[in-house]
Amino acid sequence: MSISSFITCKLCRCIVLFVWVLTIFWLSLDPTPPTPEPKILGWDKILHAIAYGCLTLFGGWTLTGAVPLPKSIWVAVAAAAVLLGGIVELFQKALTETRTAELTDFLANAFGAGIILLGVFARKEYTRRHSNHHRKSSDAAGSR
Image (cartoon, rainbow, N blue to C red; front, side, top):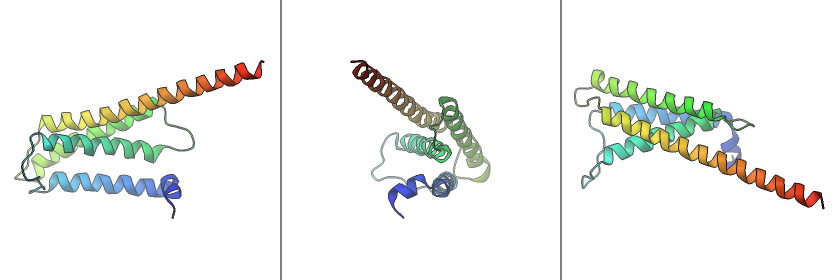
């Protein structure tokens, strides 16, 4: 399977999303999660932001079809990722003895999802402006 066919394969995208969700659950509920040596200040929050940013990206990628997703769907995907993060935080408190639910983890999750939204919206705006500029250039050339 080529990279291009993998990227466009709906089942493959669903599998990537599913594996990512399982990875988040596993890392979040593991009583002794991996930690870097030497200890890096804020490392945990950075990992939360990356994990839930990727979750947002993979969720949107899974839903994308022939037509790009509207901004409202991207917002819903990000909200679902953040909500899942909140649920996982509650599971940490309820299902483990060594982990706790932290508001700062939840905020880091939201930050990661928000960064992805900003990137997606900036790309949409760039694409819109670029296509409008290209269209105007084509119209002007055609009227000569």
